[in-house]
Length: 90
Image 1 (tube, rainbow, N blue to C red):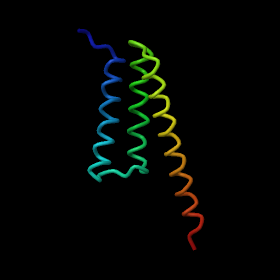
Image 2: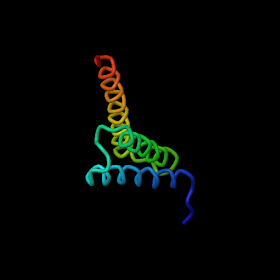
Image 3: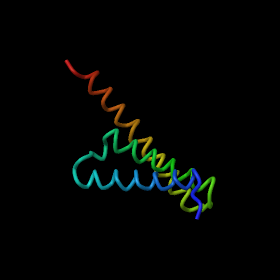
Image 4: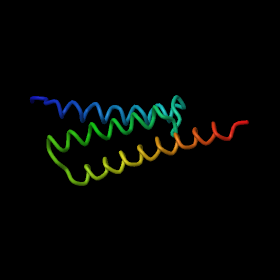
């Protein structure tokens, strides 16, 4: 079996997402932390690339789009909360 770049992108993406979840469950990362969210966003992008350039699966693609959007929302929300906290400091 030949592995193409998009296959590796998918495997790395899955590994990132699973590692992020494991680290959160082990209390090494926080669910609202930037590293956790970035691991999920990059992981979703990797899986999406493998689906677009490899064997396309509509339901898996939509799940990864949702995962990506939720991660982006989490990053934006955390940034907004940090900015507000700095602004409200005496």
